[in-house]
Image 1 (cartoon, rainbow, N blue to C red):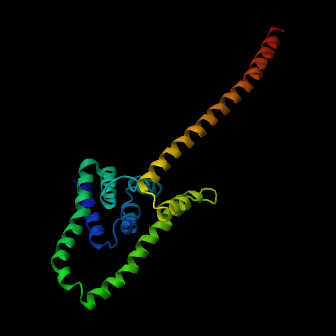
Image 2 (cartoon, rainbow, N blue to C red; image 1 turned 90 degrees about the vertical axis):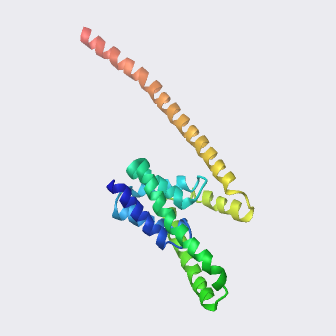
Image 3 (cartoon, helix red, strand yellow; image 1 turned 180 degrees about the vertical axis):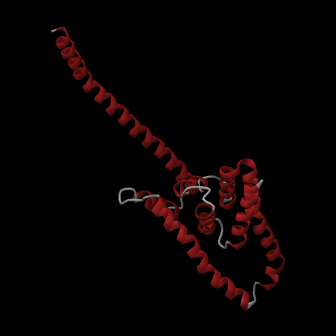
Amino acid sequence: MKKPLQLFWSFFKIGAFTLGGGYAMLSMVEKAVVDQKKWIPTDEFWDMIAVVQSLPGVFAVNTALYVGHRVAGTKGAFAAMLGAIIPSITIILLLATVFREYRDQPVVERIFKGIRPCVVALILAPSLRMIKSAKVTWKTAIIPIATVFLIWWLKVSPAYVILTAIAGSLVYAFIINRRETTRLRDCEATRSPEVSKSRSQNGKEAES
């Protein structure tokens, strides 16, 4: 029962002090899960983010469910999910009761104007780390550039982009696997006559 409680408390703190949504929480999640607790290796963490952000549903909840299940099974997933959503629900309910009354106050407007740049930085920082962990090279840079162009400029739905990327990855993997299989067969075919010849020579030497 120790790990589910740790998961709940970790994601409770993340949910309570994260501004800007799921992507803004990535830095805190990485620090808690990878650096401090060492529940998940760095490479697996960013692979998880790539999978989670491709799934339907709330990004923060999906992340909590994955980490929780990875660390402590079903109980861990449930505990992490509760920890992630309870602070948000509580804060939203409190804000909903008072925000409408005070949203036009100059102090409130200044507070939100100060929060917005911080949120941008919170989202940008993990995005840069994600680019580094994805090992994007000059050859593969065309993929994220094309994705940005399709979504931002042509207004293509991200769902279609994700499905296309999955299909393209499967086709690419199939082609690479087939080439590797063909190469291994060619190597075996090249080596077979040499092996037969060597065995024949060894047999003749043994007879003599």
